Length: 212
Image (cartoon, rainbow, N blue to C red; front, side, top):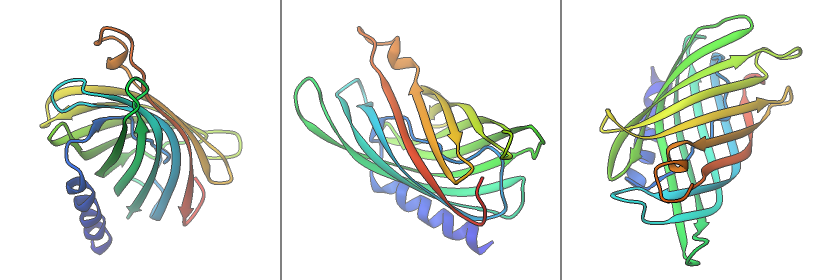
């Protein structure tokens, strides 16, 4: 259980580093299927995000980088810690805003043959307090790899029950170990006076025991 305790410590640091930052779409570079052992993901993205503590305070477009440490004792359960950061420019007023994002994750997966369903529960800082993001993932096998595409949906629940965002996610995995991620938060397209795009697109690299 020592690797699990180490991941919990890393995740707690990321949770308390910058509480209640923004509405953003955190990238998911990993596959839905779980591979035993240690794995690490690094990625860079173009992103847009918004302040969401009490109202729609600002909107910014910029870049972010993310690092994820994952450990799985078997093919059914995986624990992870994630930390991301970046900076964005408000296109309307020209102000720069920081982005810090992180969380602790616990993933449960069914090791299928062609389809790989999974549920990842991630504790994350959000809107001046802690929240939880249950991410529903489905991995699809390719001709040369056990999982070539991962799709998912991720609601963000403040205090465990108030929904403040719903992300649609898609990741394309290369046999060589890198991934392309696309994600968008749906509510900002409809709940404001004009459609607002809160989205992330980028590329990630996997390091660990094997390539997904």
